[in-house]
Image (cartoon, rainbow, N blue to C red; front, side):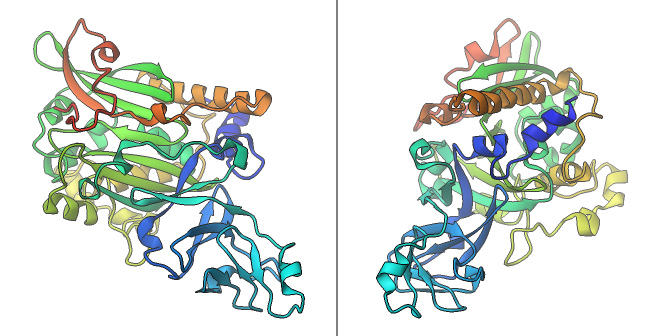
Length: 428
């Protein structure tokens, strides 16, 4: 368990908080590129790390992310007109470019001189893959652009969605590095979900409910190895990389695409879950892409025009007790993403970790918390840049392999957990 003070240290990410300062050292997913689909399209409200922002795409295709509120009277720029290279406030016509610089105040005769002294807080916003990434830290700390494999494969090989989760980012992340729940919570999906079924690894998951965990430190985070019994003299290993602060890759199954998540704080009680599927060496099939769009695999079916899941806490996630009793679906909740969300949200907005009782199967969670704490304290007290920023830290893959019992997983799988362009993922 954690002390109250340490729980607050790891979960609070607003301006001026130690964990908030750590998040502000990374490029973070801010929007899907589809949310700003064309020049001069409607602006979009964005809330990240407890900051209320507005994103827009100007007449020249440039992206902007800045304070949501006009410097004049504080009106929301969401109501603004996106025109002629800037966003114009609907209240009195003050206009801002993508850097947050005020470029026109119609009421002032000495317009240029006045505008030069008016600038909204703004952050870089860039498109890499199908995500728009924001850097919310000090300019001198801006790192290289993201190097995660899923944003650099050809567009036909990848698909990304997002959903709103009503919980703190940390309990969502912890679910992403916890492989022990798969044999229980997701048991039905292993047999029926089109993006999971048919893989031999499913048999190992369902025949050994007591995985042994081995956690290995990595330059950018951790490799969490979950070991289950396989054929005589062998173990089945599922290896989940975590790259600080909030990136996880789920071990693959058969030739199904690789998938994973970013867990991005909206504020201390909500987070965005960016979910990706990609295949390193082939295009996604039309059937795979449609299944993802329909909410199968690790994706969700969202309310039209929003990123809130159709199944949510207001409707008890459309839980079906009949399918739960029949054994068709262990939890009674449809879909892997919502099965996870339902239980993580059930803990409350910020789980009270002073009351928990952890066991050896939670070793990945324990070590992730320890690494986060060390990084936050080192940044706060010594200004030490945190892990996970360097491009080489991000070039990792998940893997699912069968190894002889006398082989250490990390020594045998160094190639398997490294990005190798043109090489298929290691999967069972």
